[in-house]
Image (spheres, rainbow, N blue to C red):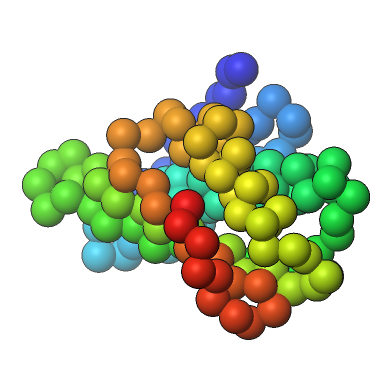
Amino acid sequence: MEMNVKWNEKMSFTGFTPSGHALQMDASEADGGENSGARPTEFLLSAVAGCTGIDIISILSKMRLTADAFEMNVTGERADDHPKKFTKINIHYALTGELPEDKVVRAIELSKDKYCSVGHSLSAELTVSYSINGVTGNKSI
């Protein structure tokens, strides 16, 4: 995979993906930017969630299960010292629909432990939790 990332001005960059999409990145005004795009670290957290979300929907589909709704809340803890890398990332999966808990847990486990290439590319500790139809899951993942 190869991308091109172009400097626009000040702290603004645009990444051009092989799939034909542009990603606008910028720093905050306090850091010399103009807040014209997401921070690269925000893209990183979104990428982890997007990667594992795609996995989970795909796995559930193979189980002949369909979620009515699915969203993720991602939190990341960063080191205090430079390079201020993420040390912990937690993803909470909130699904609704006729979804057996054991199947949801299995889909999450497969994504977390085997399939999510973005999560496996990071050195951060990745933890997960889940809820189905508003009820917090109680199975350990």
